[in-house]
Image 1 (cartoon, rainbow, N blue to C red):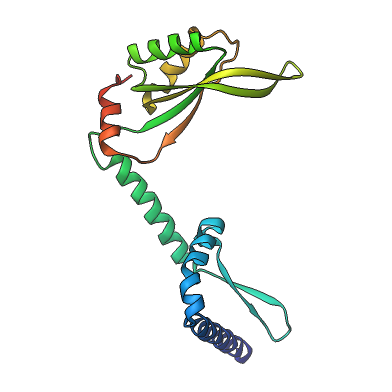
Image 2: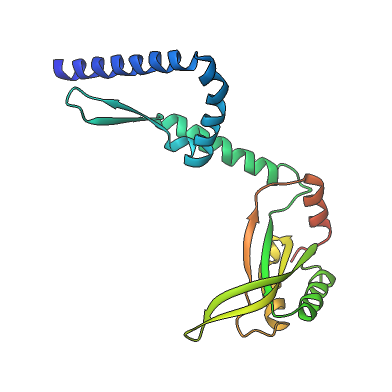
Length: 199
């Protein structure tokens, strides 16, 4: 029991020493000017929940002191809550997605984009010419010039949109991949909802 308490005391002393050292370093005018940029870079690069402080025990082995689990859970909760507020905080907005579809030429791109919007399967289709695709087909690596369609629509319309693309596409297996829209301009997302059908 004494050993446990003494280990706890040692850890607390080590943490206190690390905090004091960090405080002394942060008070330097050079570090004060650079630390926010370095700190922001670390958070963006490694993620807040992965940051940890390294300490050394009496045996010389390194110990990692990560953020407490409750702090990590609070950070995750706040992120998920903010995302849900952005997408579901208003009845004027519905869960929405961005769908990528590639076509072999601009003629099919124009025709397919027009029919998708006309059928109210999407609010908007961006046509991006000059895309070069490298892929494997029937055991061989192929390279083709294509046009990319970036389609903004409701999540509930993905199945109907996929069937429409298959029925009007030249490829045997057309690309149809979707990604969720987790936030954005409320006015744009409201317009997206009003410009598309429900199912």
